[in-house]
Length: 242
Ligand code: SF4
Ligand code: FES
Image 1 (cartoon, helix red, strand yellow):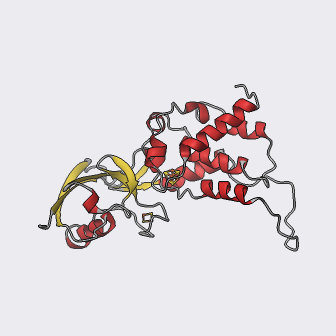
Image 2: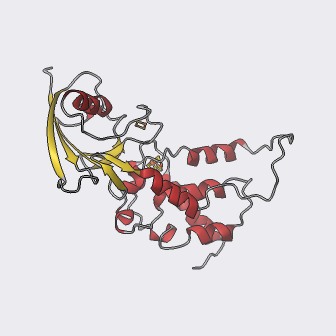
Image 3: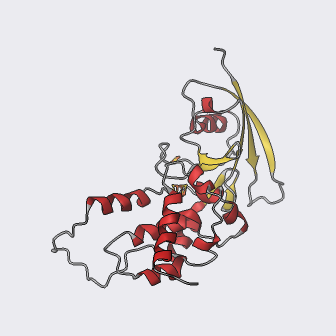
């Protein structure tokens, strides 16, 4: 099979140089076997344009730093093979997050804010005793917590969510997933009302209108639809009222 020439249309804008308007810039690159967008973007930066800005840390779908819109779909660039894409590839930064430059956005501040708003830590009156025996939990509970803990904070679920894109304070599926993680944890001593106070608003679970782009776009397959349903079910069973 003949080698493809890939044409990249990449969003360019650096907020620190506002005199320059946002634009799309085109780069052409020969495709290599096994090429990922990580490889392609680095090759473009090394050989054609050292000013191109994007983020990669782990290159293995672990750190969550390389989320971007790839032909309109929010996903991880490091895990995207060019052979899975047409020869024309459009790359845009994830919407909603603060733009740092070109394809680089600040997801960290968004996640820190949601962690504070959802009080995403174990609430307990117990004092830490380093000599105490470890407290055991059932395998099923540990696995359910692990499932929610797998979030790598890439921001793709939020970037693809229509509600989050029009409501800047919406905590989105990643935020609800975080609340679900602590609801599942027997070490967290908050009662249900305290969780519901955190999540039971239009910026929380009631803001979701069920489009489920979060579930479609989570690149590591966290069952976000299930997590949203879990929190909703808990609230319904408890007869929680707004
Ligand atoms: Fe990324 Fe999935 Fe976490 Fe959303 S829930 S931030 S898509 S890993
Ligand atoms: Fe870490 Fe892509 S570089 S997830």
